[in-house]
Image (cartoon, rainbow, N blue to C red):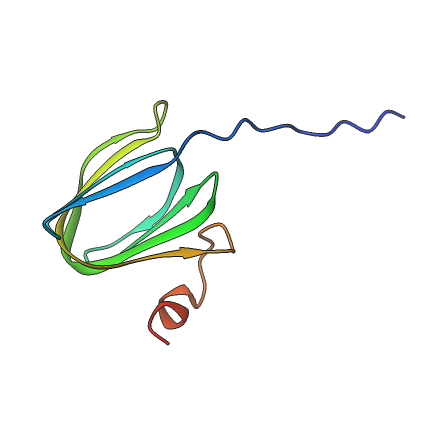
Length: 94
């Protein structure tokens, strides 16, 4: 039997926060979860969490990996777990 190794091409990733009211992200592989207070995302660089208030997705294009979030953005944190659900919120605010 032949072992096949899956090679996933990683997209370049950027995060731009404008005045803590708008986040424009590229290179998003997946939106793991999104609430008004927490966005959990998966990028080629690992997990990314944005925390705040009244947050909502203004635009999401999965093919291009483009995501625009608007609201009151208080914190952005990269995680090693790829954005998996769990105690991420607790780890963010240690």
